[in-house]
Length: 247
Ligand code: SF4
Image 1 (cartoon, helix red, strand yellow):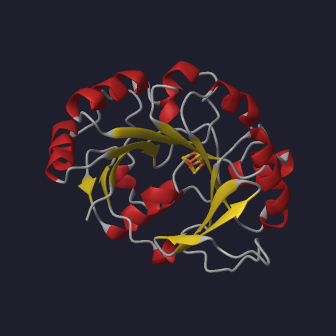
Image 2: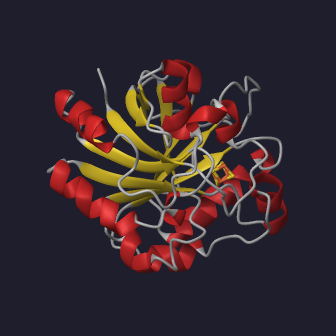
């Protein structure tokens, strides 16, 4: 069962996350493709998507952010031509989303990796202190925007005010997640009872938002991944990594 397909970009990034998952995948697949159109092995990727009747295509990255891809809008249109009916989403750090708002709104939905509103915390987790203006982005977004937040020692103590602020900005869906392989437990939602489970991950209703506490170890999602060097893979570790860790 394949749930979705990732188009992965590689190259220099505008953030410097210490935990960048690009370091966890083989160097050979991180061949820069920010100015390669279409991405390497495109025809085989499209054929695989048709063969598996994939309905969701994700623009994401191993070592960079999809907004840094030079042909972003053109490739979105190409996906709509080659895979008609498929939903297209972006997983981004959000640093360029406002600047590229017209392109951002070409997607069907977006997921922003956003760990904190606090500049010190943000810098500890993303490598620079410039926190994207999430409020302004949400005002200008014409597509659903989900917030994805890695939880670690830098921000585990600020989850409650973080969620409150997201709610005040109008966010409706949040995913809190541990880094892949991080087995530490974080008591971030004390006393709350899940309203349901999604793929074995507890889902809560908090401040009017749907908040999922994602546990990688139990996920069952599968994906096709088009790596930057043209490698096509459904290999499980890479699947796990690509689904939730990349920007
Ligand atoms: S995790 Fe994402 S945003 Fe952070 S450095 Fe890596 S590619 Fe860039």
